[in-house]
Image (cartoon, rainbow, N blue to C red):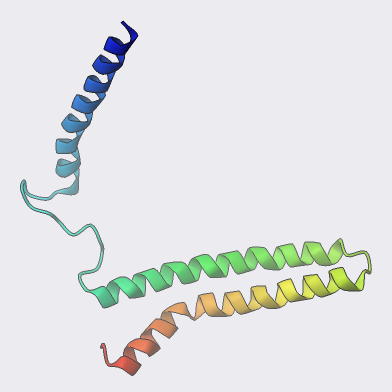
Length: 118
């Protein structure tokens, strides 16, 4: 009896998923039978630029959080030279991360110019 109920529930879920597939195609605005581009860019270079920009924003935000963490580490060091050194290293790495994150898109553009993929 329990096995029969599991089969009926599985069949109902599968049928529901197939019914929702047509709705997904209708939402994208693609004509029936065609595959549309889900990305905002049409070229690989444009896609790399978007990825670099988004990753750069993420890394810069993470670096900002790490500056706060390094400040907390410094406050909690209680004068211990080892803990102060750890806080200073965290601050240096956070600043380096922010610099790399903010320049990520520029790095991609420079590499594109060097290899001639304009």
